[in-house]
Length: 68
Image: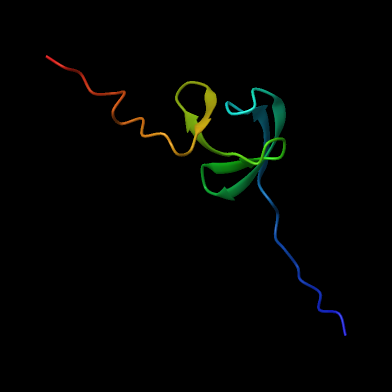
């Protein structure tokens, strides 16, 4: 007996992966986190006036600090 599994709609996006530097299809893992279908890398979606994809394992909070 074969079990049939029904999935809901899968969130996908077309964008440039920063890891492999290719225009590719990105598949949502969870909200704002995507997996590149080209290289398999995990990227995070940032929306700040335009949509950008950044490597998911980078801590960008350090980049935003200002030293006085």
